[in-house]
Image 1: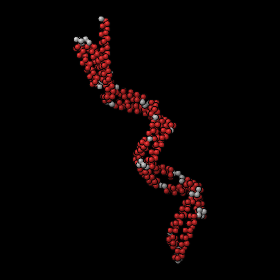
Image 2 (image 1 turned 90 degrees about the vertical axis):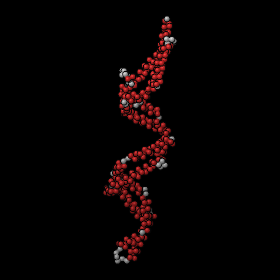
Image 3 (image 1 turned 120 degrees about the vertical axis):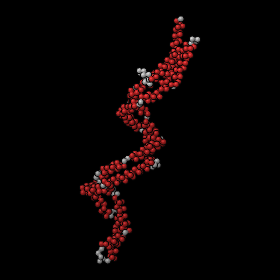
Image 4 (image 1 turned 60 degrees about the vertical axis):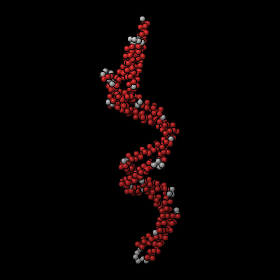
Length: 404
C-alpha cells in the first residue's frame, strides 16, 4: 500500500512536469497542471500526517511527530482504562453472559451423545490426574485422623448394645444360634477321638481303658444328641438361656459402667494407632487402584454411571428452567465479583504489556495492524487534492472569463 500511494504521488509529479512543459503550447494543460499540483500537495500533506504518527518524517524532529513512540506509555494506560470501562465492567459482563445463554448451551451439549461422551471422558481424565497428584502420605494421615475421630473416639458400647438389643427383640439372633449349634454338632460328630483323648488324659491310671472308652462314647453321643436337639428346637432351654444372657449383656453394654468401660478398653486394644494406619494403607491403596482402573476403562460401571449422570444433567438443564436460571445467576454473580475485585488487575495487564514494549517495536506493531488502512489516507489525499486543485483552477478561470 505504501508503494501504491507513493506511485500515485510520482504520477502526479510526472503529470505536473508534462503539463508545465506543454501548457505554453496548449493552455488546456493548465487544468492538468492544477490537478497535479493539488494531488502533490494532498499526497505530501497526508504522507506527513500518516508518517508523523509512527516516526519523525525524514528523521526531522518536528514537534508533535513520532506520536506512538513518544506517547506509548500514555497509550497503554488509556487502552487499559478503556478495556476496563467498556469490557470489564460488571454490567457489560452480566449483559453478555445473559445473552450467551450458557446453561442452555451446556444442556444441549451435555445431553447429546457426543458431548456427554467427551465431557465424561474429560472428567475421568481429570479425576485420574487428581488421584496421581495426591500425596499418599498426606491422604493416609487424613484417613488415620478421620478413623480415629469417627471410629475410635466415639463410644461404641452403648451403640452396639442398642443395636444388639434391637436384633434380639426382632429375633434375628435365632438364625445365628441355629447355625452355631449346627456347626458345633457337625464338628462333634466328626471328631469322636477328641473326647477319647480328653477322657484318657483326665482319668486316673487305675481306671480300665475300656471304661474310658465307654465314657467317651457316652459323652460324645449325648453331646451330639443335645446339639441336634438345640438345632431343631427353637424353644430349647439352652437356647433360651443363651438368649437371656445376650439380652442381659446388651442391656449392660448400654447401662452398666463396668461393662461399658470393658467394651471401650477392648475397642482401644483392637484399634491401636498402628492398626488404624495399616487399615488406612490397605483401604486407600485398594480404593486408589480401583478408581484408577475404573476411570481408565470406558466400559466400567463407574464410567457408565458417570456418562449417565452427565447425560441426565444435560437433559435436566434443558427441561428445568429454574435450574438454568439459578446456575446463570450464580455464574454471573461469581464473574461480577471477579470483575469488581480484579478488573483493574486484568486491565492493568493490557497497559503493562504495552508499556513494556520497546517504543520502536510498539510503533512497528501498530503500523502493521493499521498501516494498510492509513495508506488509503495518502491515496485519498492525492485524489481529493487533485480534484480540489482542478476545481479551484476551474473556478479561477471562470472568474477571469466573467471579469474580462
